[in-house]
Length: 120
Image 1 (cartoon, rainbow, N blue to C red):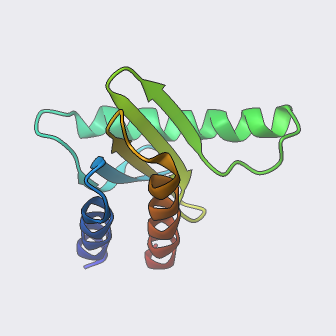
Image 2: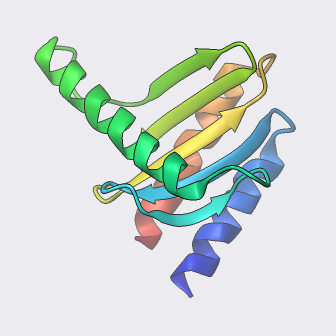
């Protein structure tokens, strides 16, 4: 039931912008809770990497006195990866196109993360 609600939230997120290509909700220990990923993308690897990147972002923000982590942005030649906390127990990972309007993506990701945190 909860997994269905998480998938519905991801469907809504992915539908808000044509620039969002995929998304996943991952537990902080790296297990996929819900995902809408491209065929052939390894969910286990996405989960493990997402949890690791967000944990490293948390530690970096604290060590460098930047306060509480809000999000991690990875820019690559084929697009963006945005990671953010979705409550205490989960990570929201979003894949976006290289020409994405990041301001809108950030807003949509923040809203989705708030919704997810209420479900978990």
